[in-house]
Each structure stands twice: as C-alpha cells, then as structure tokens.
Length: 201
Image (cartoon, rainbow, N blue to C red; front, side):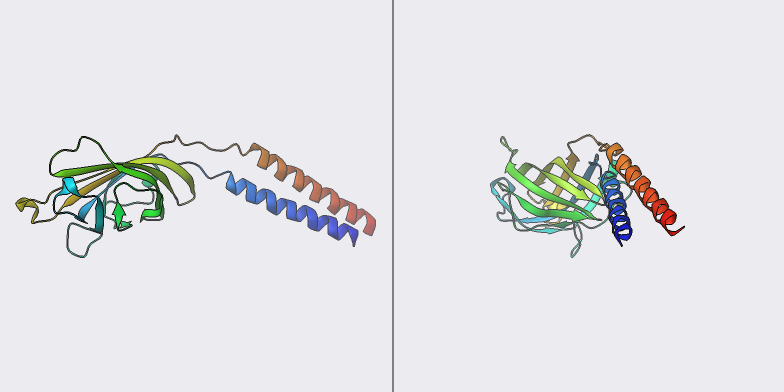
C-alpha cells in the first residue's frame, strides 16, 4: 500500500514537471501589425475630437482590417482579416482590457494620450499596452493612431490608420531546471518500480 502511495506521488511529480516544461515554451513576442478602416468621432473636426465613438471598415458594415504584419504575427494573421476594437474610446485614456483583438491575439491598453503639436484637421494618439495570445507571453508594445477630417475624395469617411509594435526582444525562458526535475522524477519512478518488483519476487 505504501509503495503504491509513493508511486502515485512520483507520478504526480512527472505530471507537474511536464506542465513546467510546457510553460517554459512560452515566449515574448516580436513583430509589427497595422490596421486601417474608418471611424466615427465625437466631433466633425478631427483636430477637436477627443473620442472614437465607433469603428468601421472602409466598406459599410465591415470591421477595420489588418493591412500588414510581420514577426510572430505572421503564422496566425492574414492581411484583410477583421479586427474588433473597443468603443467608445477616449483618446486620453487609462487601462482598457481587450482594446483590440484579431486572430487569437488581444491587445490590452495601458494608457493613451493625444500627441502634442497636432496637424490641422487631424488627430494623432500614441499609447502603450500589452499584446498576448496564441501561446505567447503578454509582451509590452507601443502603438500609434491617426485620423483626419473626411474629404470629398473619401466620400465623407474619416479614415484611420493604427500601427502597433512589440517593444521587447523575444526571450526563451531557461527550461533546463524543468528538464532536470523531469529526469529526477522519472528516475524516482523507475526506482520505486524496481523496489515493488523485488518485493513481489
């Protein structure tokens, strides 16, 4: 009975080490992603606006779309995929979880603010936050949003662009300790198995 208990403990240790080894595979992200579409602002003059009240694609009923991507975004994201944005969004903002999401990635806003020295008829906002998803660790990043007054050539649509870049270099946590623990646990299981076999014979 005691041997079975010891075997169960070692088996649990093996499972635990396997979990640690899986966790050690998580890495921080590197890469850039850009979106484009149209927005509704709380002012007809973009330079005076302080809030996005709604996000749209360039066609009626569409979502904003991915325009470009690279790095760790590439295996998961396709240009033209729809992006979900949080609204309403105040340009001078504190934290907003799930500010945008696309293809399994989520960006949580830390803060944003209107950039000083704006061009006439436009507004620019910069911010920081964390992107995560698809098995990657939450990675710090910065982003840049800009839109301008709609013109006749835009058919009255206020177009926007949004670019985000991760701010950390990819780092793989040292998995050596997890592998060592796994080896010790397996050796222990084998020792207990031999001891049980010796008692039976």
